[in-house]
Length: 99
Image 1 (spheres, rainbow, N blue to C red):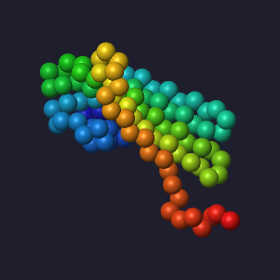
Image 2: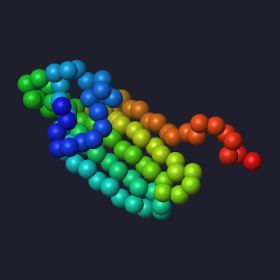
Image 3: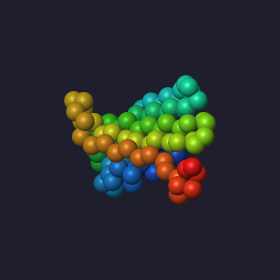
Image 4: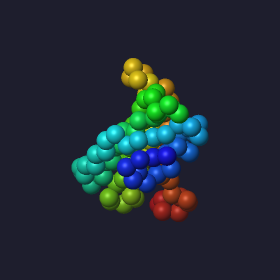
């Protein structure tokens, strides 16, 4: 379960075991150069509520055409080692807009 009203189904995205939970530890949103940058840090706890890892998630959304979006996440060990990463970029359904 994700605490603190985080809207995304992060447990499923991260493929966490059912016994593990996530808790939002910090969130930040900044608008710069017509792009909105949002970053969240989530703490992963095991079935005994022991902190076992941290996740950083982000969304970068352009506010100007073609409104590109980047979504990503990283999982870190408690010592700060990067364990896993995924980045997704928005894409148009067709190339009809190209001249």
